[in-house]
Length: 108
Image (cartoon, rainbow, N blue to C red; front, side, top):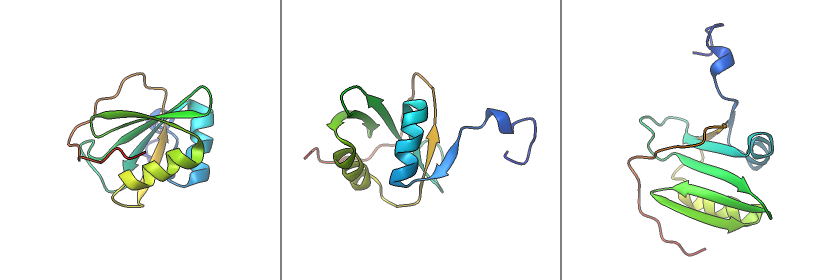
């Protein structure tokens, strides 16, 4: 799709997931979708939303978890990800439905 001049303006800002890319896109968009780079059908997608007071809301695996601080949020995200090969997409989408979820212990 990136090769199509007609479609490129409609594609989200996409980057390989790093701490720096995550915080940059969250600052720009307020909400970021994390997707496995080789994934399909919405499997293992994680939505991260920046909320006031240095907190982050994670929508993953049919759960919504609120964490305080970038360090804690990123550490929790790393636990959720099966692979380091995630990409991050800046988005302004208001709703997102996730399918094909795994269970995770909520120890944070």
